[in-house]
Length: 358
Image (cartoon, rainbow, N blue to C red; front, side, top):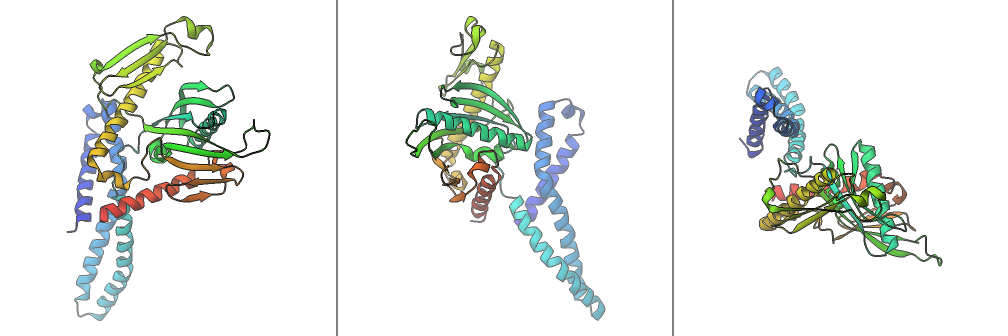
């Protein structure tokens, strides 16, 4: 038996084990475990269904080959017709299975926390950060996902010097994980009287939102402080110690939250951010140790990498990592990101397939 079929048998056995576990009252009364097992089962479904189809085809081909050994001419003709139908179907199914067996990113089913900052270009960089935020929220709306603003620093000229927000839904990280990096915009700023094209930037960071089951943070590793919020927000924001600052001492990762109306709300938001950032740091260290594991990545995933240019005069968007250019910038800024995301997903799949076969 070949390696593909052995792997499928293992997946089928795991699927059956999970099915039995899901009927266990102990699992049913544990929401976190129930969710985890349900997600794992869902991730195995396509491969298990394909395995059952492959088994059926294998049996038909085996029976047809036995019939070809018979002396009866009619039986041989029937067997020949059966093989002519089954062999191409088997080949096609095996190719489909190869794609199903490409290792999936374990974070693909996670929600995300995104951070956008205005970069080079001053006010224009902040305005562009606002445009990107709107682009992502429109895309999220089209997918039926939920967006929640966590922290903002609004720019006087419009847009944001910084905005942090979460997106919750089905396999959000799978679609948005390539958005981290420097996004460059080329256009005539509203403040430009001479009509000259300027280049400005905004940086995007997209991280999987870590659940408590993903990472355990020792409370002893955290320093938590409260203080009065600063900036806009009316009387309430300045009269109470509602802002929360949390430092994860081992990594030095620090977050400060003041957007919420209460200290409790800001503390919860700060913990979500700390969890996501520590989880991402652990992942980064693991990737560095693995070394070769990063070969299949598209780009570096670093927020300093220049990944995409939005050229307004030419109505063009170019993703530099895969050399993809789309002349529909106006649609993309309205959240029509499917073409870019599909191109990035295809490139990732191609790289992983090459790696698994090489």
